[in-house]
Length: 393
Ligand code: PHB
Image (cartoon, rainbow, N blue to C red; front, side):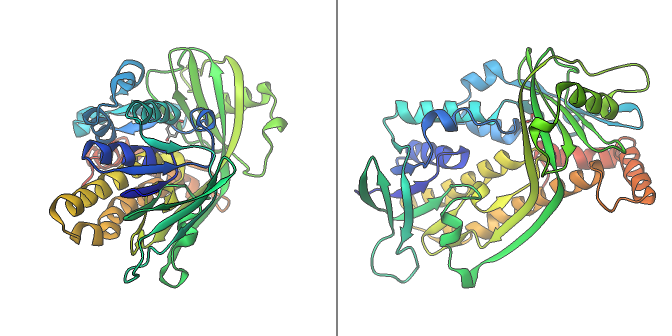
């Protein structure tokens, strides 16, 4: 089998890349280890920057997002028993949409299936070959599917298979440099059947630790609180969860979060990670395969989309104009936004979480910083620009 672009992984990066290439008349094949219902139901974050929304709309993928997603014009920072608003739209002219990542995945899969795309689920034993520059043979992806071994020959391979995938590990070790920070805490996430506690997201800093009140729909809410990453979700009764969330988020004026039936619990670890370069010969990495952010800045999926935007433009220039320079500069171009988001996510994480080494002095510094970003127009604007993704890079 042959194609132009062989894509490993059907997450937001791989599916969107395949769709955008298709719109430009470039053929691709997407290979995914999991099955369709798994990728369409895995619970992930849900904040889309305006640039991400615009791209999905322009690509004809925005109908359900517009109908079911919620546009937010601000969010709140809770600390010292009060809530202060960051007016995103007023400060930046841009908003965000809360629409779960697995809903984006469903829309992307539906669009690919409707276009009769080559999208294979349940593949295994994936290995990447002959992508190094200077080689005489074309890049190939070997894989197993439904009991048979296959080989896919392509012009380019794009690894969109996440942080545990094979693509990053296939990059020549001698060229690679990884940067990493593992945080000594995780997020305990719950899904709750309840009306929203607030019209906007609430990021809370408390001496007991961080908490986040987010939403999924008028009847389902998403909430998180900082926990030990080695803790077990079963060790937390519903009563204990509500007590912790009330302690961290409720304000001194009597306002409280709204409780409801908890129907899902999970714990996620937190790390910052960047692997460079994001390309080697005819192999390119996009999204979590190349970089991870802690969820505090809500940047994960938006970064995947921004990689894909850069790579699509570069592949278009290659196929339509025969030029290589955008492809050659892919790592350099993509990493600018990646490092901006890495810094912002780390900064938000550090400002809002209880850190192992937080002394009373550092706790007061966190509060001083929150006072500053909610009081100074300049500081609030910098935070808002980073959050909506309109910041210059
Ligand atoms: C979510 O709704 O899952 C969510 C929202 C904002 C974040 C992270 C996760 O920063």
